[in-house]
Every structure is written in structure tokens, then in C-alpha cells.
Image (cartoon, rainbow, N blue to C red; front, side, top):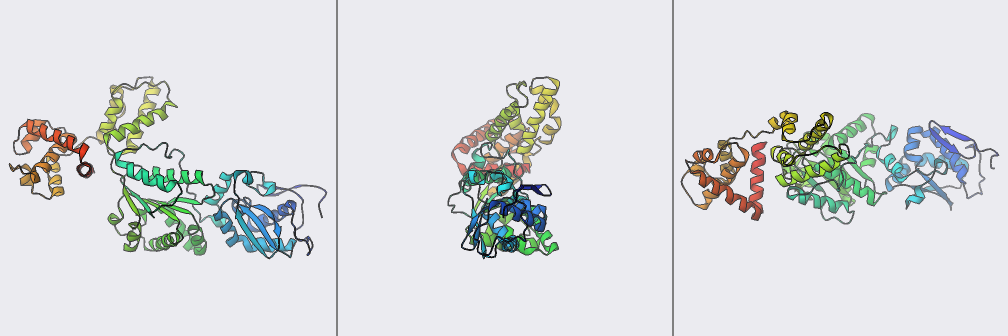
Length: 492
């Protein structure tokens, strides 16, 4: 029976337009149909039963497709939403539907195929936009509060990632995963120091996957969030909910996994979650500040799993990459400070002096733009020194020639006495030239001073050694990597 009036029924902030059908009112046992208006009334009842938060997160995104042969079919924005509703609210939905129609034996959930199908208002049971369903799947409250928010930064996309030699492999691997096709490496493990782009690439992968396939359930979170949700599930005795959520994702992305080292129970659950997803051929992307074998107090079985895929090191930035990052950031800052002029040489100076951390480099540029704009001055070298005194002082090179000699000797497994001694065989000459090169780049010592610390050699010998290494670095990738690793160790 259709009601004469079409009132708005409200559950908290959720509103339903349609017939105010009593749930106990039967459609008739011989009926094999249920109208959208009756579905609206059923949703009202589910909202009252399950609570507003659960309703808005899980029931509101559903679209009632119809009833046929005793099967009620619903459209869901993602596989994850359909599976979660079926497992957690299916019995309640079936109970309420049977109050309307006793012929319904089971529920079926399918994924809505396009944006047009997911477009509409609440009265039809459809979410307003695909993003709303994705948000619901990623940040459901109340009893679904075990699901982390996994918020993504809109700035961190592939378009804004500056690619250079130190991060080219990591970028290519991330792109391969983000393409959404078959990937021969699982997991992808990205590691490197602070401010080298690990989190940027993680966010970029998630953005790209969600753009290419909105129905894909991509879950991004930090290892700390994983541990927090795990502890919360233990406390509330809801481990089955926790397992259901984390093992039904299509792509799991965990940032800063070194955080779970030494936490035995969290590592245990992470291990089982990892295995469950790999067994389902689901993609896993992990990041850390060091390689798996360098993470202290990490269980060997987890370390082995992390090393079973592709492990990629994001090397410290070189001068060219830092300059490219600054040039990209300048274009972004122009949107906020279009009138600020930049003198020649400022960006090159910053790229040379601030080498340890890209975040510090970007922060220095942001401060310069704001300072120049506020006082109405050109961004020149005088302003740079005036504005960034603390940053430049913190990034001053304080490495000694003696430290460099010791570190290079250890790296090439030679004695320090041979490093500064007279022997000219290649076994000793090449490490000596590397040490001279690093002494020139990382200290303020003059060439004659460096020469004196290398057994009283002439400054022309030092000059020749520096020039020779500069030539070889362009040709020999292994030597370039050795020098970058040495520089990284010395500046740590």
C-alpha cells in the first residue's frame, strides 16, 4: 500500500524521502518485488537499529537494485563495502527485509560500474559521488572505527615528484605499481633517510590507483596507526573485525614500518595480514627509514617477507636533483607570491648548501618567499643570508679531512697509513683520490691544506685527484654510488 503523503523521515542528519511504510507492514507473501520507497523505509529502520554512524558509513552508499527469485541485490561502490556490509550487517538487513517480504532468502552485493550509476541523492539509496563511498570505506566511524582514516596529501602526486638519478628506480617501481597492472614484485619496499621522498611516492601510488580504478580498495596508513588499531581491537575484543578489514583490501600501504620493531604482538598480526594478502595476490607497498636487514628487533620471518619483493633505496639527493626540486617549488610559490623577484645564484646556493634533507630545503625556500614578500625586497644573496642564518649554520659542513680519510680507508678496506703514504698502486691511489675529492667537497680546507694532510702532497696533486674523480663519477655508476654512500655516512 502506498502512502498518500511523502514525508521526510530523519535519522540524525540522514534524511529519507519516500513513503513512511511501517516495517511491520507486509508486502504480501506472494510478492516478489520491493519498491524504492519501501527500501527508503527499510533504510530508516536500519538507521534506527544500527545507529547513525554505521548507517552513514555503510548503508547509505548502497543502492537497491531489485528482488528476484528470493535474492535481494544491492549495488555497492566497492568490493570492500559490499563484503563488509554482508559480513557485519547482512543478518540485520535480511531480518528487516523479511519483515517486509518473507520470500527473501539471501542478499547479493555487486559493484556499481560507473560514476553515473553512483550519482544521485540519498532518497534513492545512492551516494552523492564516488568520493563519498571511498571516504566511507576509508574513514568509517563508530563500530567501524577500527578502519584507519589513511588521509592522503593532495600535494603528493607523481606530477609533483621531481625525478633524478638518486630516486629514478624508486619512481619507476612506484609507477609500475600505480599502473594497476600485473606486478612481478610483491611487496614493493621503499627505504631511505628523512625527506628523500618515500611518503611522497606512497601517496602518489594511492592517488593514481584510486584515480584509475575508483572501485579499488586502497588502504594507506602508518605502522603506528596499524599498531594503534590492533591494540584497540584487542582491548575491545574485536579482532575478527580487525582481521576482516585489513585482509579484505586490494592494496595495503604501510608507511614507516620500522615503528613496529620490538613490538611482538603487532609484528605477529602484521605477519599474518601480510601472508593473507599475498596469498590473495593483493599488492603490498611498504616504506621504512632503512633496509629490512638493518631494522633492529624485527622478526626474521617478517624481514624475510619484506625482502622477498623489490627493495629500493632512495639515495640522498645530489646537487642537480635538489636544484630541480627548488625550481619546481618556485613555480608553486609563484601562485602565492607572484611579485617576488629571485636574483641569479640564489637557488644554486641553496641547492649547494642545504644537502641533508629535502624538507629543510623546501622549508627554507618557503621562508625566503614569505620574508621577501612581507618586507618587499628582492630575494637576493643578502636576504638569503639574513633570513636563513640558522638553517645555513645547521647545514655547515663540519667534517674533518681526518674523518674522511678514516671512513674512506674503512670503505675500501685499506690501512690509513697506505691512504696517506707514498704507494701509487691503483689499490691505494683510487681511494686516496676519493678521499681528496670528498675533502674538497665537504670541508672548507684549501687545496694546499688538503695536500699537507695527505702526506705532504702538492696542491696540484690534489687538484688532479679531484678532477679525475669528477670524470669517473660520470662514467662509473658504482664509483658514484660509493661516493654518495660515503658522503651520506660522513654527513649523518
